[in-house]
Length: 459
Image (cartoon, rainbow, N blue to C red; front, side, top):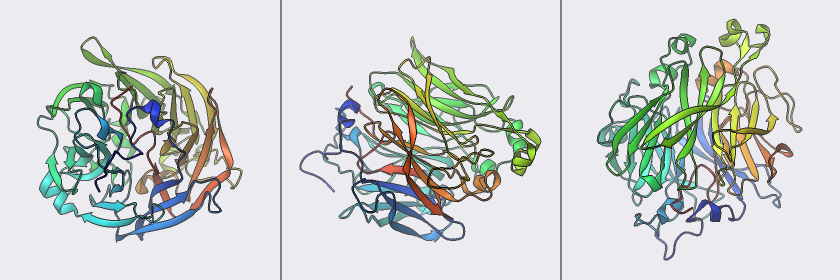
C-alpha cells in the first residue's frame, strides 16, 4: 500500500490536477431491486472497442445495501504540508451502503478494470466503534478517511455526524466530533483545508426518507435547512447558518478548489412556497461565515395527468436540484435538475453573480427528453461528475430506490456524457449512452480522481 514516491495521481494544486491524463474508467455504484447491489466499471477510453460499455461488475454478497456515495482511501490532500502521509496510494474504494450501514473496501489493483472486495466492515462494528448508522459521504483527508452518517440508532433517528477511519488498515477510529453544538441532522461533509474549517449540510433523519417521501413532511418543514461550520483541528462546532425553513433539504456541498478562496456552493432541493430549487453561496465576511441565494430555478406548471401520483395535486414539476459539481478551475458550476430533466452550466467566475452558460435535457418527469441513442428517458440528471480537465461531464439518473419508485415508477438506468467547451456551453455526446436496464446507477467516480474527490492545499 505504501509507495516510495508520492502517487502520480496526487497533485498539490487543482491547476496541476487539470493537466492530468484523461480518465479511462468510471466506477459506478448501482442498485437492483431484490438482488445484490454492485459496483460497475464503465470503459471511458474512446480508443477502446468497449468504449461506453460496462466491462466489469463486482456484486455485493448481501441484498439491500443501497450503495450510494463512495470515495477513495487517499487523494491529493495527502500532499498537504501538515499531512504526514505522502506515500499513501490511491488504490482502494470505500463503498458504504446507505441503508445497511455496511462498508465495502474494494481494491482497484492489480487490474483497475476488475476491482475486488478485500474487506467488509459490518454495521454492528460501525455502530460499536463510531455510534453511527446510514453512511453517506466518503472523503479522503489529511488525517484519515472521513465518512458522514445520517443516523445513530438502528431505527433511524439522529444525531447524524462524521467518523474517521485509519488510512492504512481501515480500522474505525471513532466519532469525529468532540463538540457538535446544535448540529443534529446530517448529510454531506467537506472543508476548506487551508483555513482548517469543515462544513456539513442537512437532509433529514432516515425515518423521514428511508421508506419514501411524504409531502406532509416537506410542507411541515421537517427536513434540514442549515449548514454547519466546524473547527477541523479542534473538531468543534463553530457556527450554523440557517437558510430558513421554507428551504427544505440542503444537500451537496462544493467548496472552491483553490485553497485561498473562502467560499462554496450548496444546493437546496425545494422551496415549499413555490416548489423552486436554489443554489446558495457561503462566504467569509469579516470574521464570520455568511450565506446568500445566488441561483433560483422555478417550478414548471404541468398537466396533472402527466405527473406521478405524488405530484398530481401540485400541478407542477419542481426542478429538484439533487446534485451540483464545480470544475477544478472554480469557473463552472453544474446543477442537475432531476425533476425537469435538465443539466445547467453556470459561469461562477463571479460567485455572487452566476451566469447561465449552457443546458442539456435528458429525461424529466414530463419531458421524457430522449438521448440520440435512446427513446424517451425515465429519470433525470442526478449525480454529476466532472473530469479533472473540465471537458467531460458524466451523469446518471437514479436518486434513491424508494424515491425513484415514487417519482419515476418505470425508471430504467442510464448514464450519459456531456462535452463542455472551454469558453462555456455544453452539449450531449450523441455517441455515449450506457443503458443499465433494470439496474439503477447512482454516483460515478473517475479513475485517478475527479472534481469531487480531491482536496488541495496549494493554489
